[in-house]
Amino acid sequence: MEFVCLGGFKNVKGVYDWNGLNLELDKMQYDFSISYKIECESDDPENVKMVLEKFLNENGMEYSYSEVSKFAVCQSGKLSEDCSIWK
Image 1 (cartoon, helix red, strand yellow):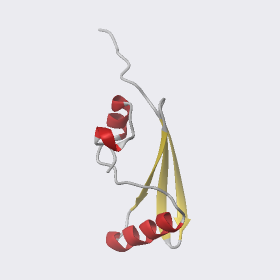
Image 2 (spheres, one colour):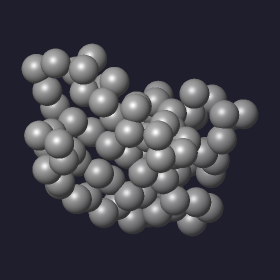
Image 3 (tube, helix red, strand yellow):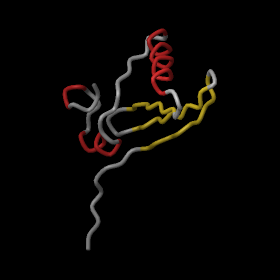
């Protein structure tokens, strides 16, 4: 049996209390790029979504909603819209 490396990435996770929310921030470092992911569990996800979107927009931060796994991004070698990874 032979093992084959399918690729990899470094993931650093931080947990932060911000404006009464418990945010989990992931930094994914791929060979080709770096991306970030914000997660927040809440009983009111639509309100959290509005609060986070407002913060990101007010601070000029581009964002998108992920549709594929970190591993799929790693395998595709792209973060761009042209590969249907971020929309």
